[in-house]
Length: 472
Image (cartoon, rainbow, N blue to C red; front, side):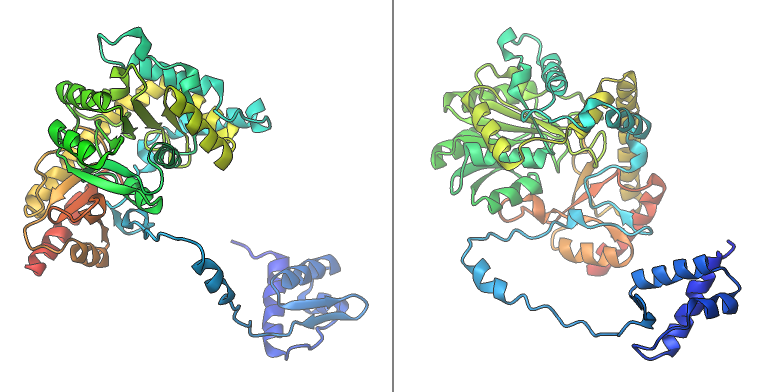
């Protein structure tokens, strides 16, 4: 690329500045125009750039001078220590899943799909239309855009199990739009559990819920679970023994197991919750991510406001579209509304307008159909790569939905050491410890099969196998 006249002058003057002491005056504009063979305007543009870069100090009426080079004094933040010490704080750490992968690393640690699996053309067009609409400047209702509330309510009603009564269908008013399901989950935890309260939770379960509960001072009551869900009697015992009145769960394509409850188990657990006058917090994060099964929201079976459902679009539309819904009925809806109004006031109307645009286009259904095909293909390719290159990494129950494989390691394997050693070879995976509310039942890995190109699966599996064998 040809260097511009201004760039050439800047480069030449930087060499001159390096040879001069701090405070030295630079040659006048006339001398510089002659030296570099350019006009005065070009020299002035170059000087302005050098001033912006902090190399030159311009003194009106006196000329231009080499800026004094000062060594910055370290800022003293020690005063904050005593102030922060007086505030209760519950450190919860940083999840390994949040690490940003380098361009050459194989990313199998996070919970997000690659851009090529997302509806990019739909999303870009939707943002363009939203930016030209009233949503770009109008004040957004606290509960959300009415058209987006209506869409979430209609989707849940359409997904309700056959035989449900008409009263199970939520209205648009029952839907609160939130900035991502994590924010909605925080509101639910605060509203129905509260600081110090007990919360029954599956083990393993979503690390973000575990971390959030710890941060809010909530006492977790783990119940062992598997791909088909927890034993209903174990849930009943946990609720009775602790007095908990809330059960956080993922009946559909759970993170990390990828399983789904049977209709019989769903009815049994919902009946236990009903009889105890408790809430079931249904985290439906993977509604759009079915592979071998279709979603069956428990909220569709509920006719008395026991189920509070969180439904997110982040994984199927885009990580940049932090839009989700909390669907709740009865007084709890009013409490959640107040919590959200106080904390965030409202979610960006521009994001909401883009979201409703994407999900109401004919191309949305086309995208979901193709996404399902891609998820199945990638899941099977990773399973095949592990079988051939790392048979010690066992996936006992392939997921029927979601983005991950939940793999058991041999007894005695050190999951965190494996993660560290694999990362040294460019393969990022997540140790399963983070998904257990208490001590883990054994060494596990969670592997995302949508975060990297499938042609790299054999390389990743080979590294995992080598590291495991080196450990042993």
